[in-house]
Length: 495
Image (cartoon, rainbow, N blue to C red; front, side):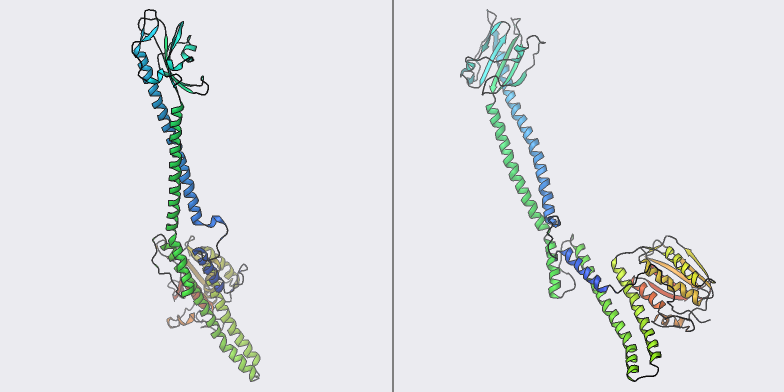
């Protein structure tokens, strides 16, 4: 039996859609993506699209929240401190009053020494004292003049006796809010419960609190404004490398350079590397498109010349020449369409295809074409390769169908899964006559056939090799040790 030849007679799966060369469309989309990533496209009207504005708003919001929270906490702390100092002064004066008090011969309270603060002697000075107890008339300071303090301890005379200092606010004097410190004591030589009280107008304390608040407000406002300005300057300076990237890409369009070589910060280098890779990918696709177009034009040139000459010379065998040359042109078109489909699908993104599932689908199709043959599949069931399912089906379909067509009836497929290897190896073996070693390289050429007695176009192995190489794989031919026929060693990148 003749050795195996390339063939493409297997049926195309029903879900396959006709593909057209997509190089130019992907070139345009990749270029548009590059320009959009670098900000070269038309500016977006959506404010959310501005990275600087988004970072500025976030920074301003956090600065305002933190300063507001810190300002409120600091204001409360300072206000309590001012109030504590004010109350401490009242307690000091109250203690001095009690220490200076004695009981005279009539059972009333008097001071054996004058209190030091001059304001106690000035009418309506804002600082007052008063002593109340029992059935005695209240003993007021001269600063009270004709007024009397209403003390809580006196109003609650029936309550339990408390000797602790009580401090509270009072508005008993119209237009003059007071803060009162009072304490009930029993002086030596008397059984009366005397209530000593010192009252001070809170105007000075309120003014001090207001001053503290004003200082805090202005200080935090200036600090917040300064922090926001600093954040905006930092954002502008920090994002300046992106503007340099944009300028570098604009330079690419105007100067004819094909790479960004300007030194940039380490944080921007990954972006620049991706842009350079995108430019390289675009160039490679454009070069592939030009190569495909040139190869197809060159391949069609000879058949068209033959047909033109035959038509001009009124060749009586023109119909045979047309049939022969159109078949040749059809082979070339099929071959380049297969390459174009693979290139287009590869550009879409990283694919993940289960090898075992694709091989099982191809086996069902081949068994319908060659029901007398035997086809076995073994190996890993979880091996995934970075190739589109349709392209993997086409590769395995050509190889398995060739093995079934030109072999002796037995085909064995093995899927190898090595976790540490970047390539997944697939072996297709048959029990045919094989291919001589000297012919194994030539058989991959377009239209090459070793057995012309069976139908085929001679493009099967050429398509397999081209599609595998497009995805970064390879295919080699050898001799099967187990079956004695041809061994196809297919290597595809692992997903």
